[in-house]
Amino acid sequence: MTREDMLGKVDHTLLKAFAAWEDIVKLCDEALEYKMASVCVPPSYVGRIYETYGDRLKICTVVGFPLGYSVTEAKVAEVERALAEGCSEIDMVVNIGDIKNGDFDKVEAEIRTVKKACGSHVLKVIIEACYLTEKEKLAMCEAVTKAGADYIKTSTGFGTGGAAAEDVELFRKHIGPEVKIKAAGGISTLEELKMFLDLGCDRIGTSRAALWFGGK
Image (tube, rainbow, N blue to C red; front, side):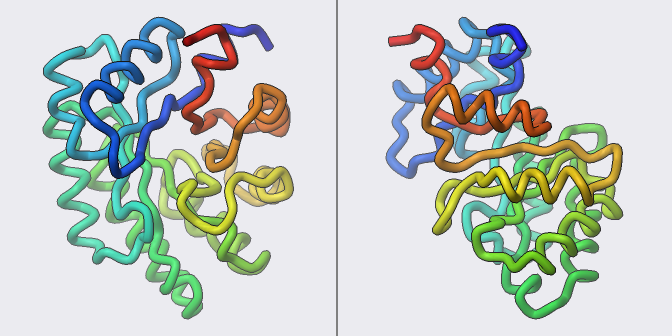
């Protein structure tokens, strides 16, 4: 895989609570320079980024982030606002409590509802795998697939663990053919980036790609 191919699969990410506008501008400029897939940013910056960069940059934002336990109606409202402000892709956190309660149909219904709100825009579903048993991960592979989401995503990066090779391998075996995989959380070296791509991930969430490929 070429340098350009790898960069084209990176969601250049900055989701820290203390991210200032100057940090967001740096992120966006790097994403443009290195032709990354998108910038993944807090919802409060979506409109300002679109006003500044327009369609030159694909904007991804997060919904129900990072804990996932906001109600479905709130997640839909977040999606609608983000899309209205120029967002292209949504990374949504599922309700972990519902998973732990075994309410897998409820989780599937929420994903389906959020995907309907996204329409033709990409929906990535964060299942926060570090909190789940293998049975629960398998149930989420089924729910994400049946609900029509575009991606299953490993982690928020704010949980007790991040992307793990074994989770990606499990997803690849059990998601439907239309579902892609995004690895995120704790991917701190270029070697790890390459590993997750080789395992079959279509997107990588990281804040470090510009450093690995020559940025300052």
